[in-house]
Length: 549
Image (tube, rainbow, N blue to C red):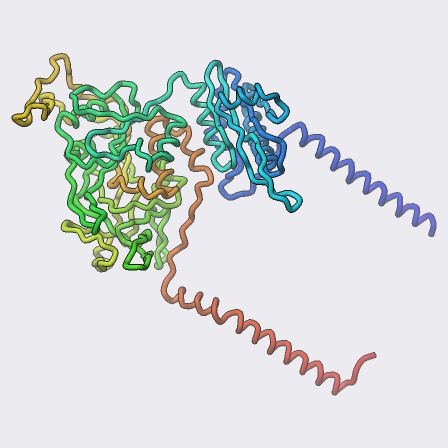
């Protein structure tokens, strides 16, 4: 018996030693090599392929200095998350030098250098030992390359950190910063307006953002990579259209956000809008229809009615989904899976949009993609429009409903709209007698055969004012694709998951409502009945056979 006990004790001791040995080995290996498993569906905690490509291309040392305080615990958690991500970055490039610095251990002169660099000391609220305090901490990152630097002043979350880091690395290592220009002079969306501050700030992380006036008859600057025509409210002249056409012929990229109507928000009165761009875009292969699109897949509108605030479904706010699912079991694509712009988005709401039509291309080199379509339950309204949410919109029978395209992309080489035409004259209103014409420059020659380029057309610009995340991602993805290609898009869209609820029938709604109201009481009653019958059966068995001792 003693020998058996000794053997058992020896086996237990050996087992414990083996377990401790395995734990020690795992700790040893993990301290020397970054290992992490990402079990999320969209791998949101794993750096994207684009980041890996950027890191592998680094041919010189890039230094990342992370200035994080070690305390309090709230900041320490963020510090650890940032360290985990940077360790993953380092695994894909030997030319990445990473330093973690706690400025609390530095003297005042070093802290002053940080302030001049753009990394401030920030205050955070701390609750420890049932006591609320304010702590001064550092949570900034500096990306350095040669004599250039990019600063992330305050990193409070890692949600968008991959994009911020990778775009900063690209910016400091690129020989030139790409320029994104916004057309001005026709009451377009003003990106420098305070309302668009967050959007401009996001663009400025990677691009030089500026306004581009074209009313003086001069060619658009050659350093502008992408031109954005965002909701012009005045008609463009032929000479202004000529300058846009020649910009595209030189290989410039263009994004057209064209509204079909002008809205007076006081009373929601509308009037059709003429921009003069229809014939130009039709020449490139896209027809802008004079209509407004409505859809059974709709967003919500909140408005005031008397003393009440009302939120209701609004068919003019078309909600484009990644995939529409119908009660018949059929499906159709809303956001194109063939374009990197939309392939990672789940939805996109476009208010008061017009439909677009892709025309047959004479040039086989042009690739056209419908980026966004309504559901098969879409229809259109013609002028005069009544867009009041209190007005019940006529919904045609299902046989007259169909999918409508609202955003397209074109890639390839185009012929100039002004091939074989005289250069349009510059219109000027400087004379008191009215509009006069200045002769065109003698040294200008129309470029008739274009270089390879890309054009995106959306039948709406209002979506930029809605402030929705998917709308912002769609716009920024489009700018990235036009200006940089596919380099940053899948980083920006990483983890951009917003899955709308699937449409269900009225019968399904009634069933779910019934279950939620009556399900729990019925379950309790059923449990009580089962318990009652089991106890009665047990009692009868005791009466028949007696108790068992």
